[in-house]
Length: 404
Image 1 (cartoon, rainbow, N blue to C red):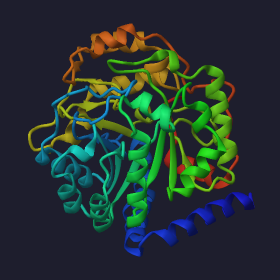
Image 2: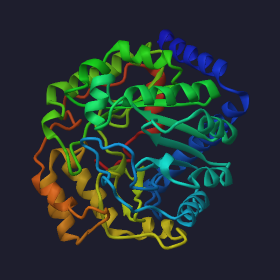
Image 3: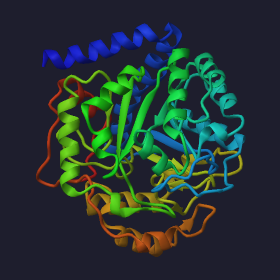
């Protein structure tokens, strides 16, 4: 147990050495303290069946992207995007109800003009910027340093060959790495993410990759499980049941002494699977203004207004989202999109959900999907071994009783 805390202490010391004090303070106050206060408040709200608003709101600002990744739900060449007024309104409405942390996604959010002006206006919030990193420059990194309330999360889907194959472009790995190094040079707190599938499993689910990420100066490494969705899903590369279990074992063991913070949002402290959207912890607003269950699920019933000022009302009053949370929790503790796409498609049709993308083929894509391995390992749960991670999972990623 002592070594568990020693590992996190070393990570903390490294981050302190490479990060300006003002950025550390922003992180500690805007992200750390506000969330420690807000999450128990959210849990009490759910337990008392009070008016609903998610603890964290994910916002996709645009469909535009400079890459063409396989298995991505974003519409290639899509034109939908939120207005700056809508983005500002969503954040303002969230703050009124105690939410100060927002995930900013795309498309590629670095292609969204005016984004940093909105982030500067909301200096009391903290933003996680999901980016492929290829557009990150020294100038942008310095802007993030001045803002102090943004942590870029760089998507790195493999090393050189795998990155180019998955991304549909050349030299993606090198360009992403340049973006990473620009942020390290600027002293910005950043993370690196990876969506794990069969073709990148060996090179990313290993100690060498963890140490590589740490050597580049990342504060955290966020692992996802590949979801075969979108116009080019490639379901044949989805993880097998055995790989999912091996992946979970790897996370549990490496967390005990890894040189970076390792994050997942798939399992709680006891190793039981969970879905952040099913718990109500996180929902999503799309570039079309749709209030969605999660980013890959691109059908909805409600849309924000031109000012973005009705987000709270929509989350609170949406019977569609409430019914979907209930149905998914009853189906599995894992991901219904992976495990039972037919039931999901039937539910969406019954509730007359509306397509929210530019391509207009999402429901037909779901009809073609077939079940692949999810992260619900039923009675084979693998609990966290690291004491600090158990505490973090218990206080940030719990189930709120939705699974009975």
